[in-house]
Image 1 (cartoon, helix red, strand yellow):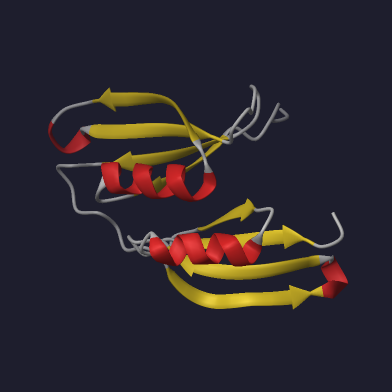
Image 2 (cartoon, rainbow, N blue to C red; image 1 turned 45 degrees about the vertical axis):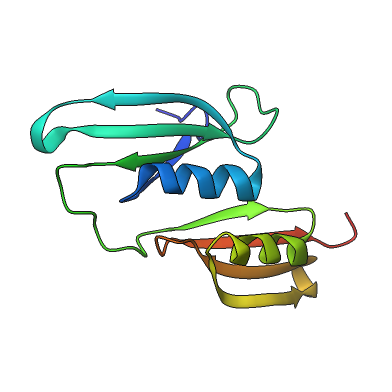
Length: 133
């Protein structure tokens, strides 16, 4: 058996609306749709996001909330985005409530600059800007 494509990543958030606002404003992600399933402890709400202009089978970034359960501790994963201007992205991120964990750092051996932020709900996000691109 072989996977046909990488399809999506989900992060669990406590405040779904706030997370949707943060990621759509910072990265210009577009909403593909909303899913509300289950009941009781199994109730879940999702916001499905994609990069602007992406067409299937491009992977989606999904925010999921379980309103009747405690949110797990953050730090379960690092999400990465390639951006066109790392310094500008860091400025917008901090204005939107993110915390800079590691500021812009040149990594010339890989032809990029990198930074790490924590979103307002403490999920780690790696930001990459390709050099000479």
